[in-house]
Figure (cartoon, rainbow, N blue to C red):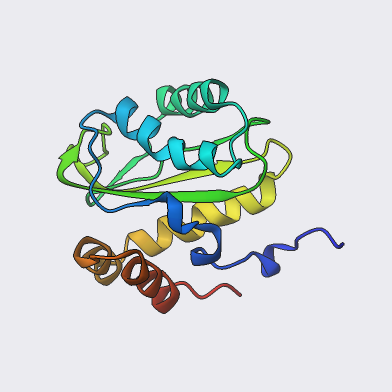
Length: 162
């Protein structure tokens, strides 16, 4: 099998398992949200060591906030505790403090899990997701989505991998 070229990166929707879509996060703190989003990835076997993965995410959070503003946060980490690049999606109507650059709470949270040795695809996915979530129509669509299918539809409509 050929290694993945940046131009062959799968769609963001293809990286998001249905089990990892949480339309109403129960958690109210950054750490608790991260734990809630990691649970389905552990259950699916994508994250092989929950404690190590969460520690890696929190180390990354301590370096620089992953709250990019506009009501969005993208916690992420590359670690040997992740088997493949995978996304988790959560939404919080009340918002969660991710120490965002604009000082506002995050309502849309995408978590990225990636293996330590997959830097190029990880950076590509992070850049595409960040760019996508800066678009108002995408954020509106994700905030209005009432089902996993509607989340997928928003991603598929706006994400155009090369």
